[in-house]
Length: 115
Image (cartoon, helix red, strand yellow):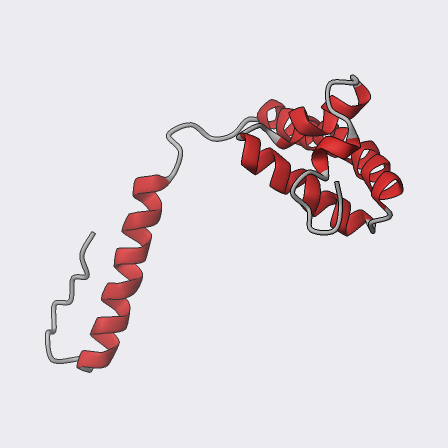
């Protein structure tokens, strides 16, 4: 995408630079724009997945917070760090305590002053 100006001397150089920058931004946006518009069904599926993930993480946060005496925010950080360390999705780690696959004490391993 380029900026076309029939009268090269009409716009100041600074204005031309800004206009060209806007054209470059538009070109990059169009280059990364999805070929197919998102359908309402796609949006609904994304929303359902987000709600489901949150519903999975919330009880795990509560369990860890109660067990360790942490705040909910600290429990979330602990779950996230464990997921990153083990290279697992957050929802997998959050489901593990409920499925008795992971105990809160295992999440606390490596936390200073805990174990």
